[in-house]
Amino acid sequence: MFKRIVQKAKRVSAGIVGVFRKRPEIQVAGLREGDTAFKESIEEECRKTLGKIRKMLAEAEGIEIYVKATGEGKQRLYELRGTMFTEKGDLHASAEGRELYGALTRVLYEFENEARRAKSWKNDKRL
Image 1 (tube, rainbow, N blue to C red):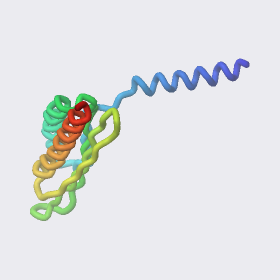
Image 2 (image 1 turned 180 degrees about the vertical axis):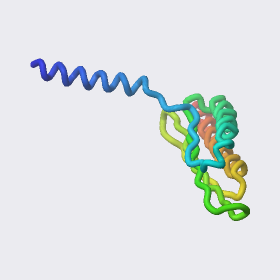
Image 3 (image 1 turned 90 degrees about the horizontal axis):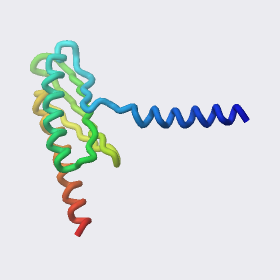
């Protein structure tokens, strides 16, 4: 009898911890040592975009960007993969380019477009 009570208490406590554990709003990963100065400005751009998206899609929870850089100097190529977390699922976008901010802009633009589509779909569904 006591074992069942303990097991049930563990399941309940695990569920409660999962509810209160939240991921960070903005995450940036994969930057090289020399590129860490870009991290703050990438986070700021993501924060601005997330603010715009939340006006259209209130259930947007956060954005995660993974940066992969290959090559050196003029041959450097950035590949960005982004995930936007929502209550109902995740949206993914990716871009690549020679400039980090160009690729970032394309990824964030995709997220904004998806939010617009979701908003217009909700509005059409209400009618």
